[in-house]
Amino acid sequence: MAEREVLVAELWYASAPDLGDPLLLEGLRAVSPGSEAQEGSLVVPYDGGEVAPRPGPDGSGGARRPLATLVLPGSSLDEPGKSLPDTSQTWDWPEADEALAPARASVLVVETSTDGYTARDRAAALVGVVRALSVATQPLVVSWPTSQRVTDPTEPGVDGLGGLLNVRLFSVSDDEDELVMDTRGLAPFGLPDLQVHFRDLEPGRLAGLLYATAGYLLEEGDVIGEGHTISGLAPDDSWTCHREESLVGPPRRVVDIDPGDPYAAGRRAR
Image 1 (tube, rainbow, N blue to C red):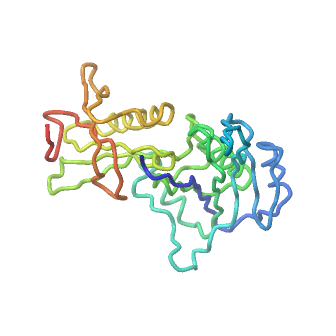
Image 2: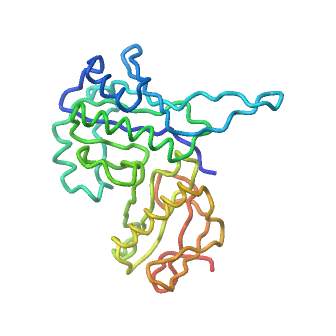
Image 3: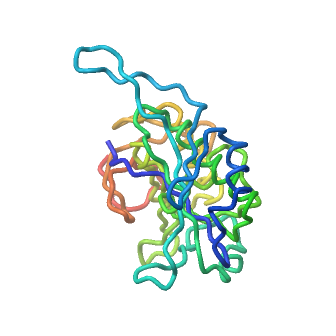
């Protein structure tokens, strides 16, 4: 099981918005009527999910804490260790660097009390707040640290995931035709990322396959086991999956997808 992280989004601005603005709180209450200001931050509860009760010591059901999203100021770029987000693995927004250039301040959006909620509920809670903040405060970009992706705040996407999932592409050898493609963003949901070590496959189509497979895991859970197969790019493709260590950091266990000869790259035990 992959180590679970906390879902985070960071909205970047030329100058930070005032989180104490009553109009901002009013906008968040349109998403969740229970939203409230607390000590310089905003708390937005999520009411859309169904959650199983937590078993008590005597076996009876006990209430779980509600899923909530916290909005708080980000640290300044002047602080040690703080930097603008990396855009090198953002492939669907060529203007990301240009949009990010004026950014000097940020607002963090962080999930809390996630135990017992589904991946889709957790994503909906965070993405809903990011969308509401984007409308109210007009950030320059939205960064999603757990997926290493930067997105255009005016393009919220249609799958309800914002930028929580990403497909990355790397060259890992002296052979320029040998590439690694992987996903980032599944670990916060306790799921393994996916990777393919390949050559001579069309990257755009392969990225679509990995993104769709990642979405399938979000819906169904950790269901692709050692030796299982998934459909490839051609109608008759059947690609075998193995559990391996990631070829590209961060270090983690992944589902490695073997596209078979002549497309598989690297050494493989078959």
